[in-house]
Image (cartoon, rainbow, N blue to C red; front, side, top):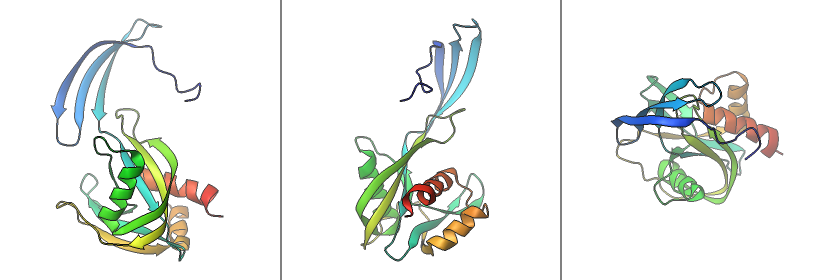
Length: 184
């Protein structure tokens, strides 16, 4: 942790859970700011932590998935991803999600970034991994997943990134990191 990411000193006055679902929880909170003595109201979406995996083939391709995303009403191109299950380490989750969604197992996996997706209202942290030395197995989709697995040349993905055709934050951050630091 660096000096700009310090624990806040707000005093929690009260908190109540207003919604608890299968995947997320919503809380309403009031804090006291000790510097201004003001009460601050917040709503937090507690979403848990997730992983995103950038699978890179030996043939200069990325394995990506095409998946419907109901909150935006669109099918999107993304990397395999999923929630970290209770008791699971980030890397274990990345290896599991990659194989579940794409049917590929990583020989090498490397953590490249941690990002908070929406710090204004959510605690969700996404850890981005790069996966290499892929071996084809078979996927194990959850019953609600509707995924098409694609192999897309890295040059084509780079072009989509440059043309603002990649719209999801984790993919954009992961690809920017990849093309800046990993693609050597």
